[in-house]
Image (cartoon, rainbow, N blue to C red; front, side, top):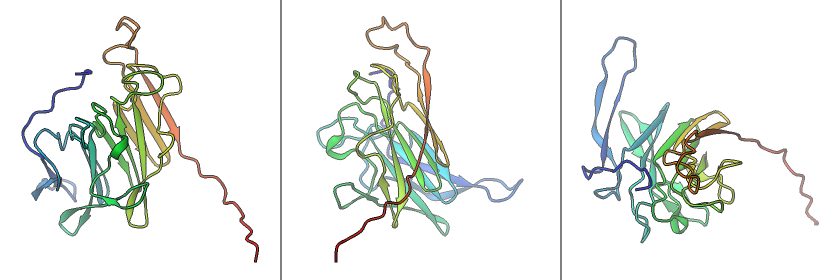
Amino acid sequence: EDGYPSIPDYGDGVLTSQRNLKHVPWALQAPPLTAADGAVGDGFGYSVDVSGDRLVIGAPGMDIGAAADAGAAYAFARSGTSWEPVVVTLTGGGNSPRLDLGTEGRGDDFFGASVAIDRERIVVGVYGRDHAVGADAGEAFAYGWKEGAWRLETPIDPLFGSDAGAGDQVGRAVAISGNRALLGAPQIDGRLGAGATDTDGAGYVYIRTVGPPNAVISAE
């Protein structure tokens, strides 16, 4: 549906491996990583990325409340020879074991179909998300590591294509390097309303900017 490859109901885990030295074989690390709250059909492991001792795993088929296939992603950090789940601090307060859109999530968003991590930044693609410009326009959301937890950095304005339209599927592929993020919009099914002929696709680059600190004067 919506051009999304079906997610086999084969479980909720993914295996990881590592190699530390050149010409040294990869050694499987056990036990396999799993989502503590995962279920069959979540597609845990559909997308993965790693940066140093941190990794992120997508589960785009996860149901969030009544929103089927809203999707989620999970962050892990390496501790010794094992990988431990990392909490996410919610925008409205409290913590969660996963990255997701909570009550803002919608059916067939497929949050987590693409993920990317670079040190203290994560980008998650949500290519099935409807936007003001139309259905399946797609978006992406950025998270930053702060005070021992991952926090959403785009609570108001998600990453989106400046000229994107319905069916573009912005966020079907994502990448990040430092303060630069790249979103793919392949238009796999064609731009909706365009006779399914516009499948040229596009890419959108974002640069994270931080403004200078503001001086605040408080009356005594």
